[in-house]
Length: 550
Ligand SMILES: Nc1nc2c(ncn2[C@@H]2O[C@H](COP(=O)(O)OP(=O)(O)OP(=O)(O)O)[C@@H](O)[C@H]2O)c(=O)[nH]1
Ligand SMILES: [Mg+2]
Image 1 (cartoon, rainbow, N blue to C red):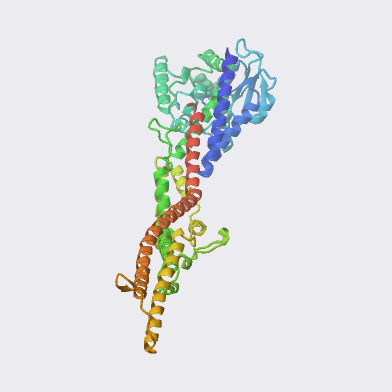
Image 2 (image 1 turned 180 degrees about the vertical axis):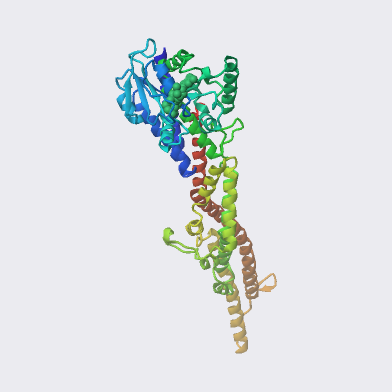
């Protein structure tokens, strides 16, 4: 059963380690390097430990100098393996007592423990297939820096932490603040022993143990085992041995220790992200609002204005009307329109056969107001999309929005230059109007010529033929009046039609230009922002999985 449980624990740990790894990768560039390095170290340590003997459980004895680590180590081992002495500090190098030597070498190499002792079997302590390594360690608050360093390293590596405290110093801030509280997530693999209880009057043993339990609860270790013992007299040593044996027999300690490391690392990532430990809250914190259709439309609209789209739309209308006048105006005066410049040509937006990639408009370059408008629009979009995201992730989303700020004006200009504005496309009605205009003019001119001939005949005193009449009006006069009137009416009519046609053409242009601007905004602003938003969503999900909440 224990093996089965251990396997389940291991596969769960697998998933959590994988999730922690993904979360770290996702957070790269967002969270401080230092935090990520700390997590990578945890991952690295976990993979090393897991590649080494899973048959062995490594139990370390930690505590202040003189608390009785070496004495308790000997008492539990049932052998005088370690040196215990009055001299302080006594232990300066880790020493291993090993039950089940086979396969322990690589593990001890990794732990950098050189002093190894194959311990004599103790009945029921560790069988052949349950390896156990007890480590007697130097003092954690040693006057010797090397001792402290060894302890710091070992605290991170062993599977089970046995804290050996004594009645004088069990409440010392150093051990609680520097070790026990920061490792409160490691309660499942922590055993606390109050040693030297023989030095206490018997009636004080219980109150002191209770006091220690209360302090540990404040550290966050409320479920940890607290045992009283006397290494010298042997009181309670059996209980310590049983507690250690139980942890070792379950074969879960290694996975539990690593799982506790993952929990701690995930909490650090959450903290650095500005998230509650373990990722999202019930309120759904840890996700960004993202881009909405409305916010995208608003961004495109603002960028369109900043990129002078209204100016181009207006030029499309005016250009069309000018062209219509040139084609359908009164032939006598239409040439005047030739002197008016085409507003689209002026903007370099009226070309045929140009290469779109090389197109540039001659629109006024983005000045300070346009730049400010662009910046404000991008900022507002990023602000809305990043709403709800925690601190550094919010900054990352905003940063992504600004990423292509420099390229934006050029890209917008090129998008406008490449948009098909249908400039120079003829309208179907121009031909008909033009033909009738000329016909009217020719009729009027013919009337003039007729009257001219009649006047010349009269001047030369030649017989003037009778002019045909229509309802009493001479035909040439009717031709002149009718021709001129028709010309004016047509010109006015054409103006109305061209105004309406120009409006519809500029509406089409506005639509196409806005779409072109929206495409640029999408590529340079929306997509990078959405990438960061989804990165955060993935990060919170994997962090949750790493914290074991999934
Ligand atoms: N009365 C009493 N004395 C003890 C007990 N445990 C250890 N001692 C004594 O305390 C002194 C220090 O014991 P060690 O086991 O060397 O202590 P340590 O924690 O290993 O010390 P360092 O190796 O210096 O870190 C020795 O003189 C022991 O005999 C105990 O339970 N009761
Ligand atoms: Mg010692």
